[in-house]
Length: 427
Image 1 (cartoon, rainbow, N blue to C red):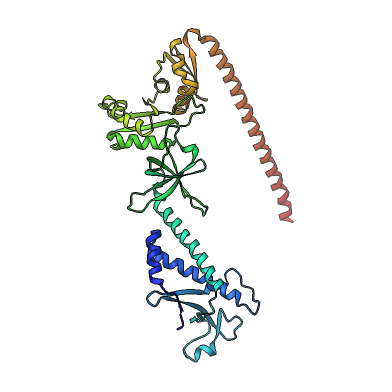
Image 2 (image 1 turned 135 degrees about the vertical axis):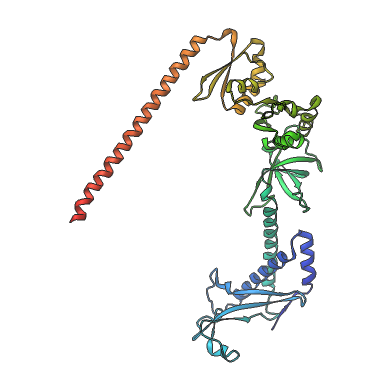
């Protein structure tokens, strides 16, 4: 069998495998695909008959690497026919029976169609080189996808490499002993207090592993995601890892709308163990546990509050550190509430530029309206909500009536169509 020589093939495979951290079999597969594309280019260049090659024309061809002999062969699988109409896909029964008398029509044979060393020209070699580079990139992307796919939603250690426009490119590891992989930290996922200098290390939350073939890092990470806070507490508080204390909800504003307001997080915790204080467990002795989390988040303010199944108690806790006098659940259906506080607690309950009440609303899922208790008119507010509730019920009833009327119309139309079809079938 003939062979096209590839000097240094064995060393090439070893070096690519080492440099790109790819298995040797993956490198060999990429080289075979690249050589097959090069052969296709050679055949198209030699197409004297002006034959049209469709996309699947060369599916019956394959490349065989001879690593020890440092070369390759091109093989073609052909079908045995009585009369040949395509020399690339078929071979005559008479020709095959000269070497294999037992051959029959419809059988397949594999033939060596390797071109001469000199015929595999410069253009085909260039095509091979280009395809090989692409295939190796594809192999690397596939390995990254397989390595990090199951790590989405977890926290990784990262190191700053460089800046690209407003994004920070980081080096992350999967902790499986594999080399570092590049990840992108977009502007919207960064913390305002972080200092992204070269080689600085951070913990980051893996948000997404891209499946496409776009340029740039495949991994998108975050420092602003609430999942990072959950991980840091779970890592620092043994009671959370042991499931004695559970994190019920998290509301985080890592990038406030105003530069005059700092990042802040509210986290609601609970426990079924009467002997355990869930808030105290998260804060730790003299604040030791929560301080580790605050330090990792570069000074972000964190409020740990006790979750409660009672909405009024939960809302009151969520507005910490403000002291709440009364929580009025005005409309449980639309989850609207009035929270009454003393005048000196108004600004604390609302927070700087509304941040405290905004986070409390996200944490609890209720629309919270802070009111000064001294100026609150119970009768007027009750009457206002009664009117709004009546309008809402009236609108709901109207919507229900409209829906029912439409359903009745559709039913009548279907009955008419059925009645019209019946005489035609009888006829």
